[in-house]
Amino acid sequence: MSHFVFASMPSAGHTDPLKPIACALTGAGHTVDWYAGRRFRAGVEATGATYRPMHAELDAPPVRSGRTGLDGIRWDLKHLFLDPVPRQLTELDRLVAHTRPAAVVADMGFVGAAVLHELTGVTWISVGISPLPIPSRDTAPFGTALPPSATPLGRVRNRLLYTLMDRVVLRDVGRHWQRIRARVELPPSRTSPLAGISPRLHLQNGVAEFEYPRSDLPPQVRFVGSLAGDPGTAFDPPPWWPDVVSGDRPVVHVTQGTVANDDLGALVTRTVRVLAGDDVLVVATTGGADPAVLGPLPANARAAAFVPHRDLLPYTAAMVTNGGYGGVQTALAHGVPLVVAGATEDKPEVAARVAHAGAGMRLRSAAPSDPELRAAILRVLGEPSYRRGAGRLRDAYARIDTPAELVRLVEGVVRPSIVKY
Picture 1 (cartoon, one colour):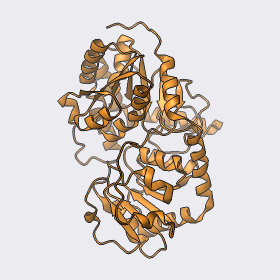
Picture 2 (spheres, helix red, strand yellow; picture 1 turned 135 degrees about the horizontal axis):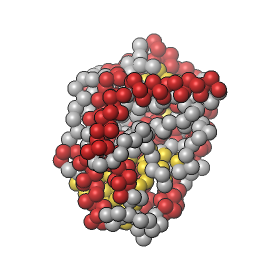
Picture 3 (cartoon, one colour; picture 1 turned 180 degrees about the vertical axis):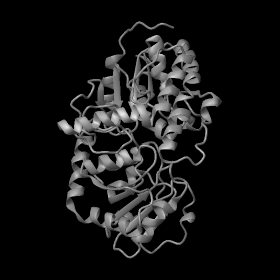
Picture 4 (cartoon, one colour; picture 1 turned 180 degrees about the horizontal axis):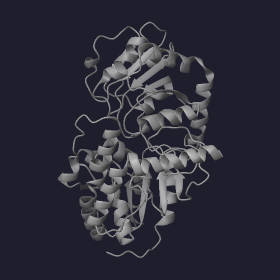
């Protein structure tokens, strides 16, 4: 049996996808130490891993302070993901030296794991917790949310956009990264820190059928099915649950996830309002807030702070979401077609892939107009092609035995290697 060190950024979107990996490894008899934020301790320990507290400096990331658009993206890259690298490296190196793991398993946002591998040679397994961001001759740069193109003209477009991104749009981010590399005594690199993956094994959340086709996909990228959901979460059904399971009306689920939900009026209350006169049952979740914040509900709407997707989605005809990657993965694993309206983080890329896969509609605003939103929902409910598209993806997820595949892949790379401690 082997020993592993996990490391994840202190947010649910970066920590939760590693839980199925930890569960699979501890279930197979391996030992896991997990370096994570303090609010995730209970969830980490529920996987069978030993919790290792994150340094307080890393556990309280800075606040973006209202920056949006490209300015917000640049700020996030520099200050949320790159500035922590020296401290991450120090902490992770100390933990690795103490535990001598067979490998470090980390989400792609935890750049310190990649730096530790580069400095010491310790085996590193990267985990993709968003749409695959690595460059390809067949895709536009991650963040543009443009469709792929492998035609000769499309590849010219892609090369030009990568050049524009590197030399103009994210030029100051690249310089910031080189300064950090110099601080930790690494030479300059032209590889984007958030597009780099392990040279040994990259576990990508999702299925290949959801991703853009790439003729130059690195062989270490392995799609492992859905790394979403928390199967240990207890569910006490609300009094209105029989309305969901009865099947009397199509169920439309709306959620803004657990991150971009400060303004529930952007999508949740709007969906409740625009469908008030339709023969559907709207189930809204607030991501933790008291459902009373939604105000009085129409007769065809129900609300809760949280309902496990494993319980709700089998009864759901369509899901309206701002494009959180984990929630979208879970919906597609259940064959639920989507209406996606998201404009921050990786959400436009998620929405673009949903549309490309024919599994739903992409709205190009985080707060679409009432007529646009209602028309999209009714179209996804009414056109069988969307359910067929989601069904094809459901079948792709079902073909992967995720826990067994995780154990097989990870065990396959933890052979003895030369590591400089």
